Amino acid sequence: MTIKNIRELVKTLNPMQSSYVNLNLIEKENGEYLLCVFHMIPGGDKNILQAAAEVAAESSTGTNFQVNTETPFSRKMNALVYQIDQRENLVWIAYPWRLFDRNGNVQNILTYVVGNVLGMKEVSELKLMDVWFPPAMLEQYDGPSYTLDDMRKYLKVYGRPILGTIIKPKMGLTSAEYAEVCYDFWVGGGDFVKNDEPQADQDFCPYEKMVKHVKKAMDMAVKKTGKKKVHSFNVSAADYDTMIERCEMIKNAGFEPGSYAFLIDGMTAGWMAVQTLRRKYPDVFIHFHRAGHGAFTREENPIGYTVLVLSKFARLAGASGIHTGTAGVGKMAGSPKEDIVAAHNILHFKDKGHYFVQSWATIPPGDAETKSLEKKDKDHKVILIDDDWRGIKKCCPIISGGLNPTLLKPFIDVMGGIDFITTMGAGCHAHPDGTRAGATALVQACEAYSKKIDLVKYAKTHKELARAIAFFSKKQPRKLGRLRSG
Ligand code: CAP
Ligand code: MG
Image (tube, rainbow, N blue to C red; front, side, top):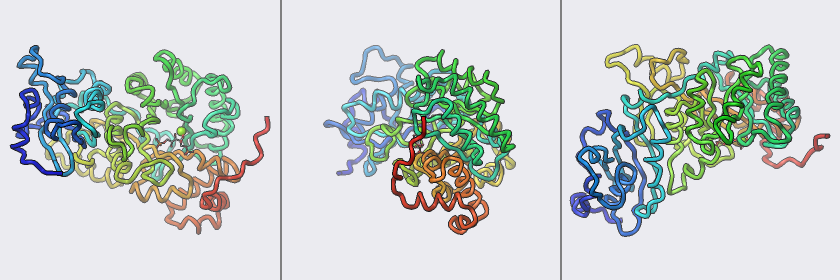
């Protein structure tokens, strides 16, 4: 593609487009602007700067013609193209964040920056690659309240991932059968069980009965193991009242605080549901399941946004944790570049994204103690219990999708740390000796990692792990065993 002289490109802008471009914007990091970088291929007959200006207009104050009703103030709210890279097809746009709905509304930001613009003829490709929130803006948003640190405190689990499962089959068990599988996983040594993303109030597994049976199973498992357990209930629903009714049903079922999380299908139930849960239940782990995100985030998608962008907005909105993918280790598409960058950016106090370094709070200048804490936090040498100083608290990467005990260490090696929840569905329930053995194999795989013992060597004295290695390494779909009676 021919690289055009930037001054020549500027001359091609019409008056409307010109009012959305400022390639000399020096105050972009002065705190007034949310910054975005898009990968963009112009559509139709537009050049990159013209198309970028059209995107800036449509995603802030404008439309496809200059209107007579503009005012000097409205023009101050124009988003501004402040940088372009013609080789890489990248455009940087600064958004005055006074544009956004006050009171910390995340869906409103997304409606601007990845709203109409994804459907514009002026672009043939448009993907939001990274976003930067200025400190002053961060103070207006909730961020997580109940975090991975709180869950660790409740479970008394430190120095290793939280070991979880998703009950499988994905759907079709009665509430009693569902709870039985929970019990087996918990007594096998697992910490955390989640509903699968479609679990709701199905006639064969009524919500209220599922909750009651899970409570019984949890009580029995806690008694038997002497260990605390957590269940993440999917509270996604058709309407606000039903979602809240499900939350209250769980709270009133006798679960102690910390033993339950609220799972929300954030992409299909929506950002308002995520933020409602965060604001109404600040003492509960809000678990953002991202089913449907692939339409926007797959690396090969030319239109949408990245896993990093989705994850950063989830942290801003106050999700306690969000699925960030297995970096290609599991069954879902993904790569370290995508999934690990996202996981680190939502976990750490400060980290480099694809284009921006995001700090999630302002460190008072010269605050050496906070700076040293920041380094320790990143080195995982300390779990920062009281991280109110951070501003926006950490959001926990939830690692799921095609994982099994043999893949735990490979993922930790890619992640470079153990600060995450992992949930293995088939990885536990397809174990040749059943769920309880699958859970034990997961625990043993984690022990082997913690003790720095080779997995196969550790399996020599741990039969459930040995059977898991034999089974999952074969990678063959298992012949259907005896169908469950009844
Ligand atoms: C995993 C899972 C999760 C996906 C979500 C499923 O089951 O329950 O929903 O992992 O993907 O339904 O596929 P398995 P992601 O462990 O049996 O694969 O975490 O990438 O959002
Ligand atoms: Mg699932």
